[in-house]
Amino acid sequence: MKFEKRNGVVGRDVAVCCKMREFSVWKLLFGQAGAIGRPTDLILLGLILLIFFPVTVEAQNKSINRYIGLNACKSCHPAQHENYQKYARKSRSFKSVEKMKKGLTPDEINGCYHCHTTGHGQPGGFVSIEQTPDLKNAGCEVCHGPGMHHAEDGDPDLIVREVTLDICKRCHTEDRVQSFRYKPVIYAGSH
Ligand code: HEC
Ligand code: HEC
Ligand code: HEC
Ligand code: HEC
Image: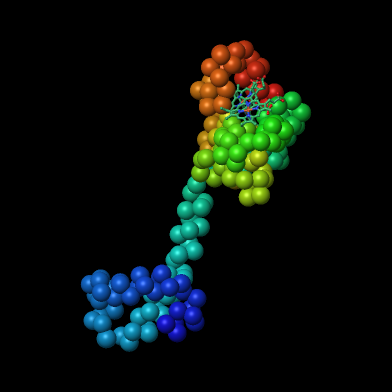
């Protein structure tokens, strides 16, 4: 247990590695229990965990195509960004909820975020105003999908261009969506 403190490996990992000593693969690699002193085994496994654990977590975070918010599109798409701020009511959609939330339960307010923010309830989407302030309004990505991978080097294959009316139906009523067929309403003041 002294080892646990020295290497900063949490108790759970120590428990896992103690179990692993029973596995035959472990024995294959490091010989029968006792061939190598126990503390040495543990230190070795501790090092392996310390090296590989952060790497896998980082790889996982990177592979999710997260929502990054409309300000991250500004540098490469300044015209769309400017129009959006000026003309799209979506760019002020968080305020609409703020205006009306008096008397609502936290659950009810959470329901509003489904349509009035970016990516709420989806991986890498809006969580709360404190944790994900850049996603508080319904931004470009409600129509174009999460933009993290595309924004890295502007690869057009990594963003949705074909914006279909089905995407609008996630938040707009059927009747309203029928009227979107008339351009330029499909752009919703975004372009
Ligand atoms: C994530 C939910 C969401 C999606 C998806 C979405 N919208 Fe919206 N849209 C909103 C919200 C919320 C508002 C109202 C913002 C406010 O005023 O607070 C809005 C407002 C609008 C408006 C301006 C208000 C109006 O009725 O004239 C238009 C136009 C519009 N959306 C078109 C579209 C179109 C077209 C699509 C699909 C290509 C689409 N939206 C997809 C949430 C969404
Ligand atoms: C299913 C998606 C959806 C949900 C859930 C939702 N809204 Fe909306 N909301 C919209 C859309 C779409 C519009 C724009 C309607 C339009 O004009 O076509 C809108 C418009 C509004 C407006 C009008 C803004 C204006 O300036 O005219 C307010 C205020 C508003 N919502 C508040 C709320 C609140 C508060 C909640 C939660 C109780 C909520 N909404 C839940 C989709 C949604
Ligand atoms: C309401 C849905 C909606 C929103 C929100 C939206 N777009 Fe679009 N966007 C579209 C549609 C529809 C097209 C046209 C797709 C096509 O060519 O068929 C498009 C096309 C584009 C294109 C391709 C070039 C062009 O102008 O046709 C770019 C770049 C783009 N959008 C960037 C953005 C950026 C940046 C934002 C946010 C500032 C944004 N979009 C917000 C619907 C939207
Ligand atoms: C590093 C610069 C960069 C950033 C950041 C960026 N884009 Fe792009 N985007 C590009 C380039 C470059 C293209 C290709 C332009 C062309 O082919 O005309 C493009 C194309 C697009 C297209 C059209 C795709 C197609 O198939 O033609 C859309 C939609 C788009 N971007 C949306 C966004 C959105 C939304 C964001 C923010 C979440 C964003 N972009 C952030 C550089 C960027």
